Image 1 (cartoon, rainbow, N blue to C red):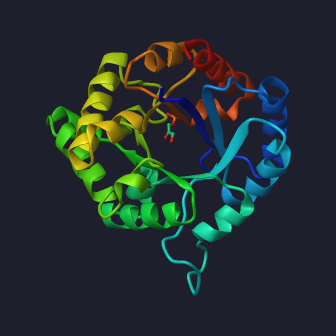
Image 2: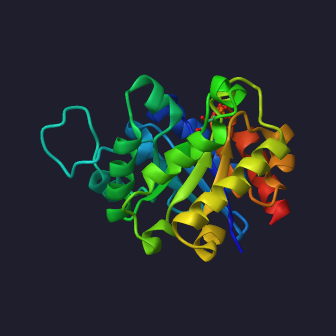
Length: 255
Ligand code: 13P
């Protein structure tokens, strides 16, 4: 009943020209996607317009990588939820570990971003995950629970149904090292119990929980086969039309 979501996070890659090339490749391979699978690309802000233009007649949706939590005003360099919605985005990533690590984002600001995203009908993809040190100290479950609880503070159960959670262990991001399918499953199952405790079992069963961290065609089948892994948030492999399309095909085969 949960649809698989395959989402590409392009990070700080692909200005409009490179985006056009990547989108062209993607469009050639995957303009139509199985009805049980959702596909999304999240380009940098300056390439969102290009992506919306290229993908309007395909099954691929467009999202952003971040948003500011104020409506508008004197916030130089920031982008608001209404701007993203107006630009054709349906989703927005919030609280990626790179934003937490390099740009000082906190659980509190992630919560504010989640709220404003929902107000603008942008499905927030809330990123959570532990560092290697936290895992080694066996603090990863508690940390992820705290991140999720903080991000969802004040979000109604109805609105929570539009939220997507992405579990991205920091030690697996861009390192080539992936969580084993078992490690991913154990954490995803735990995340569902956290959501169930906040809302209800019914709601927890409906929310998509993505895995992110060095997902690629070679490991996608194993990871996506896990019962609580509902898709992937893919960095490096989403920058290559062949690799990203292959992962989409794997998701289609599993649906
Ligand atoms: P990689 O797939 O490059 O490890 O990145 C994962 C990620 O951070 C997606 O948001």
